[in-house]
Amino acid sequence: MQLKKTAVAGTMESGDIMITIEPKDAGGVDLDLSSNVMQQYGRQIEAVIRETLSGLGIENAAVQAVDKGALDCTVRARVSAAAFRAAESSDYQWEVRK
Amino acid sequence: MEKRYTKDRLRRSMMFVPGNNPGMITDSRIYGADSIMFDLEDSVAYTEKDTARFLVHNALKTLDFGKKEIVVRINDLSSGLGVQDLEAIIPAGVHVVRLPKTDSAQDVIDCEREIARIEEKHGIPVGATGMMAAIETANGVLNAREIAHASDRLIGIALGAEDYVTDLKTTRADGIELLFARSMILNAARSAGIAALDTVYSDVNNTEGFLEEVNLIRKLGFDGKSVINPRQIGILHHAVVPSEKDLKKAYAVMEAIAEANARGSGVASLNGKMIDRPVVTRAQRLIALFEADNVTEEEEE
View 1: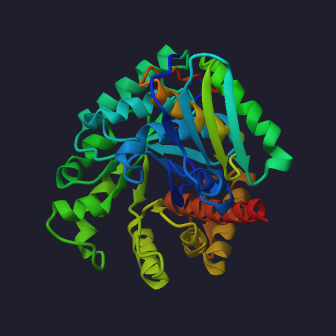
View 2 (view 1 turned 30 degrees about the vertical axis):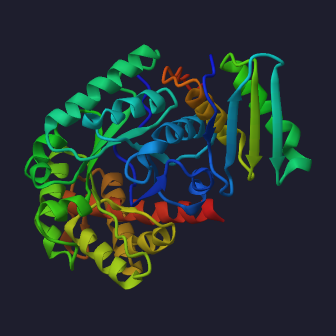
């Protein structure tokens, strides 16, 4: 997926995560994560963000994430929404529940 | 074919949950509603339709809602948003799609065609997803019977009163303004053998008014009601629990039937009166309501 502009998804409400994605030409994914549960879940949130981006074929991006206690499914939803907005794409590939 | 929905189940309460609020989506199962309805329509701003779809899609795919019925209210198809909603929620495993602003049988047929197309595309058995139709205009009310019979997938029809009273050039009052619509919807639902679901009561601080409305729709024969605040669920469920006297009578009816069956007799009587079929049906429904309430309480404990 080709990122074209900076885009945001999510809110600062409890249980949510706000994701900002900025296009980058090279150098991989830079992730700036802050969370009120950083000690316990920081590594897990980072893993979900990286895995979601990689699943969308995004190799280079600057990502800022402000977490307010989001579950994994919310992290995935917000990263995906921000990425499609940044790519100005609506070619969503919805997958079937396993 | 394995269906995701059951037509005949308890639907005392159907709780609206805004589709773009992760905190509320995550907590939604703990409040004891019989059905949870994630909303992609009116509670989601136009600019956030995309993010809400991602949220509901991922929540449906990941979270465990136990035995609750999971409904998603989509945007109407004519807005162009409804089909995009269906694309996101059908593969994610929604049980029932709630179609808003249903004016005619054709609206149901059009929505069903899209659902079938998406099911087929994803290898989901065609017919697995259920539907319900919300009726929110004078036209819809007058077409209620045709709407209720428009698809085998329909589990029920519901009244959406806010738009309806506006269409009638009136406002919500003591219920007299909704009497015709409620009666039409109820009779249409019963003629199709599906559920009749009442509208929301939006003044969440007015418990007395809410109870009056609950008692009214119970007397009319509705299966249940949409709720917008978890506080209304307990009040609603408590109000529809049968009284001890009615319950004792219902169990006595069932015992008399069992005894008659054991004797090999087709005729049962209680206190000298013959028990006919409608009495048995009503007793069974009462007992089901009572037992469902106990199950809900156990789940919540």
